[in-house]
Length: 100
Image: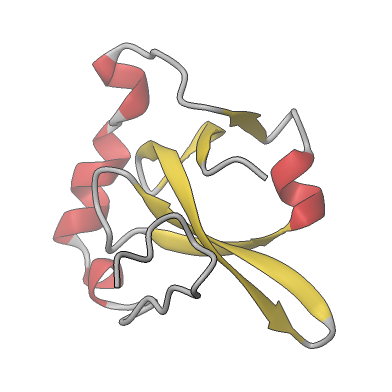
């Protein structure tokens, strides 16, 4: 599966993400996605969600700045929600982001 993805709608105001790891949770594989612009914005989604073309596009779409970074991003950064979420990202040996 490719590593660069664009969300069809902003997630905390951002749309460009990278797939950094696959993890197994409760007998299901999840994809750990992290924003290209802000590592604090990360999410876990199923394979079905990721391959849903209504939700995600493989690769990074060339979008106007107003569509790739929305006002919701600035609201998110000012809120307390930006302080919560995934605190550490563990990358497995097969990840393209593993530099060790």
